Length: 502
Image (spheres, rainbow, N blue to C red):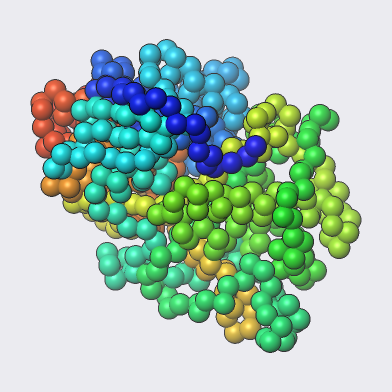
């Protein structure tokens, strides 16, 4: 069954002790573990689910790579190993099962202790130091150093590090692209009436349209960019038909139908071709696979509440494909186009061909002694402690869908390029000095909402994870807090291990 969270049976209490403990089996989590192991450290990974590799192994095969020359070290090794499967020097487009096989091989080759289906239950601290992670299963994990490689930042929050979720106002860091943004990206291209009965406000709003006020440009709020599943589609003869989800409600797609009737059909406009006669289906246009506005509570929600949000996204996106392929109100040519696709029989075999992981584009973000901002992305700053480069567009998906002057408008989409690859500061992946001295955070790093929109790409997560694990090893060697790691030594080791820092 496709689930985010299902509490398993509690086991007899036991403890695993290692030099480095990584929480999260994401691409970053595995990269951090491999790095630590290659540096001679014992390492344990606590993966939230059964599968590892995060989004890189869950449908996001059309990698948002930015400038590929900025990707070095272990991240580049990953794309070369995936490429070798296809007889290529490297590739940034790949099938999910191929990526997962590389992550599993890394774990086996490096003797990594991998504990699957481990959900954080508590953290035992001594002052500013993590002593132990307690899991719901009864397992305890002790280590000298910890890496939070989760997409949500659950460990950093439990360890008492400062964090933020949502969009800062532009004024917070003197930015221009943060907070409320009404722009042309993934926007309605023609006017669409938002009311159940067109023109009749008293009839209520169509599903998917919020009654929230639009907000003022640049104003901060608690909202985060929309999630979706990066669904792998195929036209292969043995494809699985799109499932009709439980709880399917055709009224959820009335807005999309109205948009189609207005002459716009672009839902499949970002369905990228992949090897093996497969695709990576991502959001495109005003109404598509993004379940806009239904994820705002995710960052700090309980596991059970996240399960509810997860299932809402499953129902929405499976229902979207079912609706487009089967509802007789949809024009026949569109039904035929969508119906020519299905789910690949050889991918995600334990969840009926559907990706097992939701694309959590942002959740909590650390607030440390250095916050990456739009100014860094634009190359307006000088960072003395780089541990990797980022280069992708400052990219935020829409955060809400509202009514403006009697018409539906999406809000929150930003797509503004960066002029060149830019450095990510070491200070942004460690907590503030005095908050937690043995924790590193390569995924939910210290960054404003809009800067995170550029940094939040899978290759960069692996780059920063390598830096985090290297710093962890150096901190153990020198018996110092992570904030006091000798940056010169860190830089030399990263360069030796083929990191690209400038």
